[in-house]
Length: 175
Length: 286
Image (cartoon, rainbow over all chains, first blue to last red; front, side, top):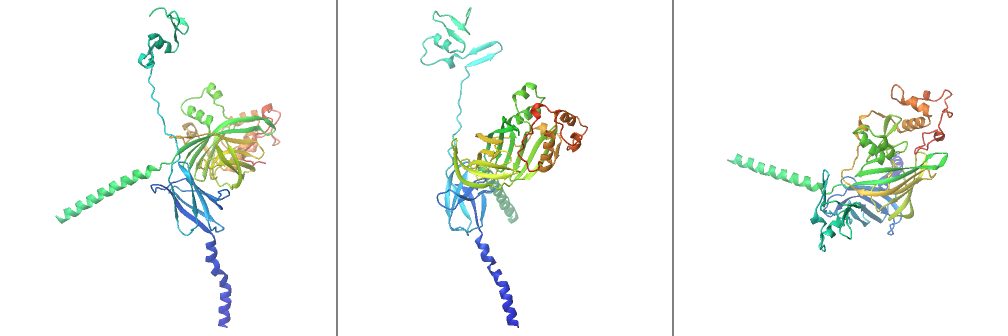
């Protein structure tokens, strides 16, 4: 009697012994994305692929503020091809086979972003009330021989062939 | 003597701890989150029955980490002026804004939608969770390698071309949640179209409304209520709108503003208002 009860109870509980095993079937890929100084990189996008041609996306995730991520998979893969992208870094690919440990994925090469160029221009024109002052030094070129060439470079002012100076096509009466 | 020594040791240790704290505090700021602005061209059919009339406007999305602020470029310019002084009719003419502008502030997957209906601001919160279907279809848009993803949202089906060349979770309207930035997006009926025209890294981007919006009373509502209310307002005739704007107190419109038989009075409508405006979200519209 007790023996049969024992048997029945084992029969009933037997399926539940498989619960922990079925839990293993759902794998989670965990880890942190960091830069070369081991500082966590937030808002990096991870995409995982089934095969090494990086075509069909299985799952994707953006890293948290502390650089961590966890991607659950319903079907346990043997090998995962991961691509990590970040706006400030060049994308990098990783192949992951071990799903038990937490991975540190490091991005080394910063994306080529053009450095800012500052152009320093000298102010050659100054307007004070009704007077416009031109800085001759700024308008002067090394190849200049005569003042005519410099005057010609002032916006709106031209020198005619007979030496008359015109401002907006009107002759200047006296200098 | 011994006591002085221990306090001194303690003080030195405390000072070192302070230095350590400051050093870590400064170095941890080295990975500063990039701020970036995205400009989308928005094209949509103005009326359902007049497919030849297309409205063009520009939408900007400011992003910083998991925070984004989406708004219409000219609407924001107007708000900027109106928070300081009265806007001139000349400025009003040059800063064209479409009929129903909105703005969306998103933090993680929580979005706050704000829009004006008539003279009243409304806002509602929504959890963003798009069920994107990724495909392997590829297309090159300008210099971006794009992939196609589709989603059904609020009664419409959308095709989105996103690029992983810009690995940021950004898109027009409320759309986001793809492994890259949306470059082109349109609904299958061809009523709405969004095209990314520029992206720029920028500091000191705006993530808040201007004072004129923040100061005005905002009624908090739900997505369903808002959509129904907006539809009701836009289906009014010119005269009915004037009557609504001249009402005593602010509040959500009820059917009493419609004509007596419950139908909208089409006789009073201008030719341009003959047709109904299309909506992005049509799941609450009957």
